[in-house]
Image 1: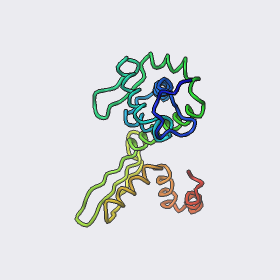
Image 2 (image 1 turned 90 degrees about the horizontal axis):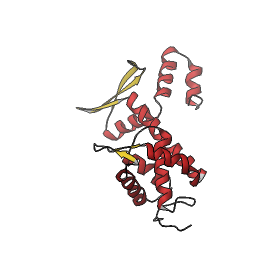
Image 3 (image 1 turned 120 degrees about the horizontal axis):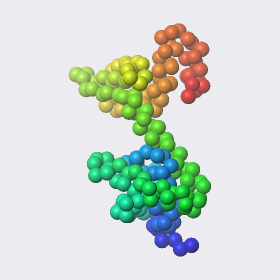
Image 4 (image 1 turned 180 degrees about the vertical axis):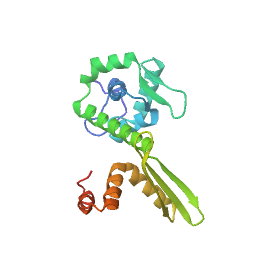
Amino acid sequence: MKYDAFTGGIEPGGLRTKDEVRILVCYLLTSVQAPLSKEDLVAIVVENGLANYFEVADAVAELAGKGVIRVSGGRPQMCAAEEPARMISGQLESVLPPTVRHKALCAAIALLDRAKRERENTVEIRRTEHGYRVTCHISGGKEDLMDFSLYVPDRMQADLVKENFQRSPGTVYRMLLALMTGDRDAAAGLLEGDGR
């Protein structure tokens, strides 16, 4: 097989042909069954060392130009599989090494899961006279299950609170509930990592 793709930044076992990169883009968009932003799609592939940045960006542009995938004109640009992408993925996904498919799909699912958590469990950061007020909302569907605010002295800490909260809002909810109801065993279990 002739390698025709740039290999800079690709880990061993990564994709080395333009066709493989195009197939991977189709496979990802078809498998997750949800639009991905162009930036996220490229990041999933590049950050996992599966293909070169320029090759992925070229593949997205070429597939969009041929109507295989749809790329929205808004910001961020969202990519979605069209019928030709589903057909390519179904017929040619076995061309991709199983480890590549697994890595890419796990990364895409983790990204979608994070986006859902962040959409459902929001954080507001507001500057005050003496620092920042961080308000976290834990969603229960139609209304918040819980919201709480805390003060931090600087923006770096506010961003850290936001990041840690959105990483595991369920754990935060269970911990606060255990503490407020006096369930020391549940709180201790969560601190030991049993609740994750």
